[in-house]
Image 1 (cartoon, rainbow, N blue to C red):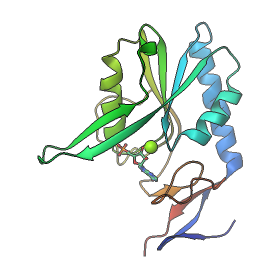
Image 2 (cartoon, rainbow, N blue to C red):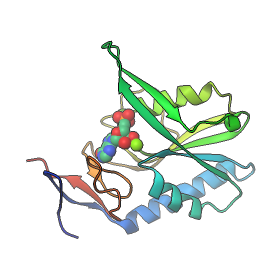
Image 3 (cartoon, rainbow, N blue to C red):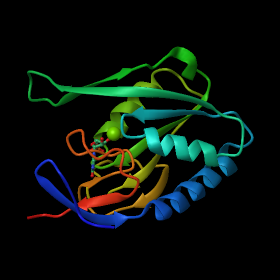
Amino acid sequence: MEAITLHDKHFSPYITSDEIKTDVKKLAERLFSDYGHTTPLFIGVLNGSFIFMADLLREYPGPCEVSFVKVRSYSGTQSSGTVTEVIGLSDRVKDREVVLIEDIVDTGNTMVALHNIFEGHEPAGLKVATLFFKPEAYKQNIPVDYVAREIQNQFIVGYGLDYDGLGRNLPHVYKIIES
Ligand code: IMP
Ligand code: MG
């Protein structure tokens, strides 16, 4: 594996597709041991989760349902922060065992906002599973329920994750080379 360039930034190889495959399989087994007695509803958070979802679900050996949402964040005119809108959320989550599938949890702001919005739709249970987690960047008090792999506090691309639109299709994961 060689270093790559996306736009103006350089990235070096960090996690191979084989390593990710092992992490994903382990996570699928954990989820099955917790949800195998039910029919969970796995909801992928677009865009970043699309490759992870496809691989995770093919490793999940029980009955389940699958859906996707897209998160739109925009800055208000006030300095109070960000409003997050969830596109594609239907009422089908009511009374379901829901697992939100994230590509990465960084500060955790997105995860907490999503969690709060989904809670309002009264699922029977609500958990979050993420492929990557940056413990040093995480700013929330609540634990992340399922983490496939903890990573350093560095910007990564590949396997669904992008830098300004590029890099999602890379099978391996790369980390930024700070200049
Ligand atoms: P949050 O800081 O946990 O709210 O993360 C917000 C979003 O930023 C994630 O869902 C990703 O889309 C994106 N993100 C965070 N860290 C990275 C990274 O290292 N590479 C690419 N995207 C990232
Ligand atoms: Mg994302």
